[in-house]
Length: 245
Length: 239
Image (cartoon, rainbow over all chains, first blue to last red; front, side):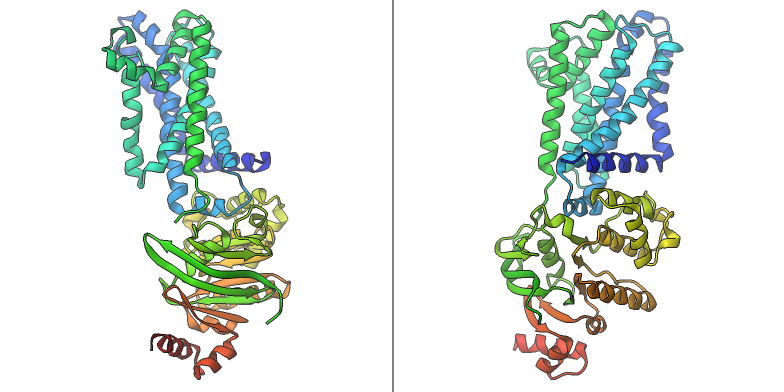
């Protein structure tokens, strides 16, 4: 692995994003709009907004980065640029780390923008510090990126890649504890929830925002999230083949 | 033929999707010369080139490139590869594309400018690739293969779809690179480009039909026109 090649890849990915200001605007403004909509929708139930606003804020980058990464990587595979890169002195890890670096930066920007609006204008309060929410949002975004990278190997077209969002992400959102507390789930659902990475990402966010405690359980949540990211990256790396048939 | 070979292929066999695409192919490509890889489309040219740059799964046989097994990491610094379809980032400018390749290959922006000059794209350097014509995009793709001054260039149909003036200029550039000591393997399905090569490899349905200089291919076939020569050699093979 070389720092030069990793950095060059990150710069290249960011330059590509910059050429597409509409996507950038959507990335930054859509979460803000959605959070505003939610706040208005439940304006008479402030407590509910305080409860789910924080965790939701930390989940947006995950979904956005999943989509952006799976489409970008699919394009690399389909357009032949990936094959071209594989003939160059570039480690697979350089490509993955380059992507991670670029998208982590975008995710951080997204998290900062949506947090500023949520904490500054929508009156969101969390028990834990707001920077913890931003940091968790970035780590979730990298998880989203890693998952997107992995599933892009199973899509042949952009239509398929888009459909992986509801297929991979929505069930995790339903089962992570946001919609229904995990304690109230049927046994098999809870068991499924136990093995899905979102559950831990959500729990960490919820602990940081609702309780403001960074206890052993929080550390476990964070470790599982990071572990799932590393696993997804490793699986993603195994789908980048130097030689193909 | 000079003693030194940049590429030596022995008994290469490749299957793609269950079909044998290259069947027991053995050949060598001389250093410092332009070797034309000719054959109708579907004859296995791209597969052979992919195998030489090390991105193709090989069933059996050996490929030695610049003294090392094809696809080994040190070769990735020394072999420039132009894919058949332009493999460049459409949403970046020409220079941004080339600078990315240059950074990976640890070479400076002056190399990028040199390469732009070679493919005659200097005035288009700051244009976004998606806004370029097909021929211009092909030249950008060719430029990416030239970045880093590789010893061996593997170019898959670099002149397809280009106008005659540009084709002549590029062939002149290929010959100039050979004079500098580079080795070039250039595929084409246009026979009139064969005369611009020092050596020829004629491929048909995954088998090598003929090799040699354009003059010796004419002699082998008894035909003056290379197009006719190729047809004669194919027919001989079939008969």
